[in-house]
Length: 215
Image (cartoon, rainbow, N blue to C red; front, side):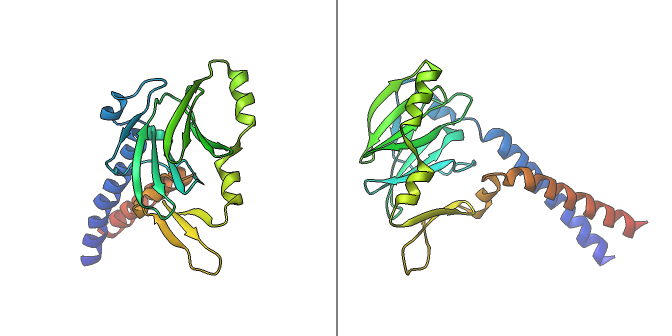
C-alpha cells in the first residue's frame, strides 16, 4: 500500500513538471512586453537590471574584454566583462526568424530577425544598418566570421555546459563566468525535443505501475 501511494504521489509531480516545461517552451519565444514597447527597427533599448530568460542561450562571443551573450528568442543581448561581471543589456527589434552574432575586426555585429544589424564596440552600441535586400544581407554576412569561429581563436576556451558559460584557461580547471540555473539546460540545443518525450514516458510508466498495483 505504501508503494502504491508513493507512485501515485509522483504522478502529479511529473505531470506538473511536464506542463511547466511545455508552457515555458511555448511562451519563451515571446519578447517581454515591457521590452517590446521600448524597441523598434533601428532602435535598441539599454537597461541595467540582470534578468533571467526561460529560453535558449543562442550565441556568445568575446571581444575587447567583453562577453556578448545573445538570448535571441527574447530579443536581448547581455554584456558582461571577461570574468562574467554583468554590465548591461540591450533589447532589439524581434520578429520571427533567427538572430546571430558575427565579428569583423574589433566590432561585434548583432544580426536581428529582419536582416538588419547593430554594431557594437567595447560593449557599446555604435551603429545600425538596414538590409532590406536579402542578397546584400547574405553577402555582408559572408564577410564576417561567426561567434563560434571567433571563440576558437580566443586564448581562453569558453564553452556552454548545461545552461551556463564556462571559461577554461590553460593548466586550470574550468570556472563558470555566466552562471544560469541548471533547469535552463532544458532549452539548450535539441534538449527540449528530447526531454518532453522523456517526461511523458515517465508519466505513463508511473501511471501503469499505479494501475497494476491497485488492480
